[in-house]
Image 1 (cartoon, rainbow, N blue to C red):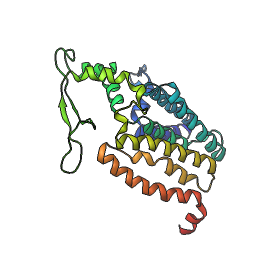
Image 2: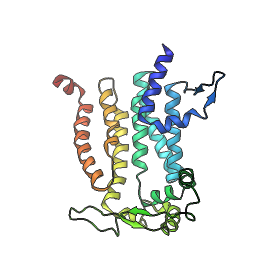
Image 3: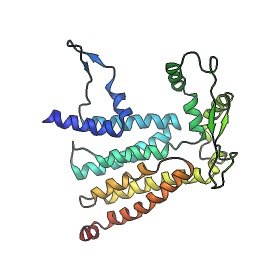
Image 4: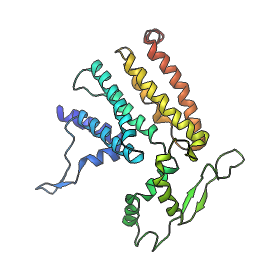
Length: 269
């Protein structure tokens, strides 16, 4: 029975975040019969902790250790509040949702992050694994980008991408080192409406998590999980992301009202 439950839990995480789960399996080992054997995580708690640790690592690379510490402290508060409701050793779907979505919002993909990802050695290693030769020597890289400051817009007001040549990698290397400017007065990219909205959304979601932890009860627990998962639907870039955010905000307001007055929601149901 316990193995069946563990397999079910493994499957949930695999469906939701396969890249993370595969990163936990390590190298495949071969048994005497020749079958490939993967060691499963020992518990949902262990999976959750590794999920959080992985995002702390990512946010440290994205900005710095102080930025990642803000994330970790927020998630620890959620976990403490949820554990008090569900009990020790139980799955923590609220904490998991908060861990995934706060990290997603805090690591919004701006110009500095795009530059960091492209100049990360892992990117070139992936190219070497897929194509013969050395990138930049045996073949050249071109990038289709729509910088919000310089890009043109179509008749609907949407940014239009255009091709940038191999020299863009040099610009990326410079930009990647300038990530410390992110969100500050010298962040020329952060003054667009989209970037201001992304930064504001981080604060809104952190405030939401504080509201959930302060008022969490057994009666509004399911609503809290639904609220924590809302950023998962804020996908895409530019106008696509903007439209998704509008739809999410409508559900956000409705669910928050249900969270604050669970007795009313139960009567309606």
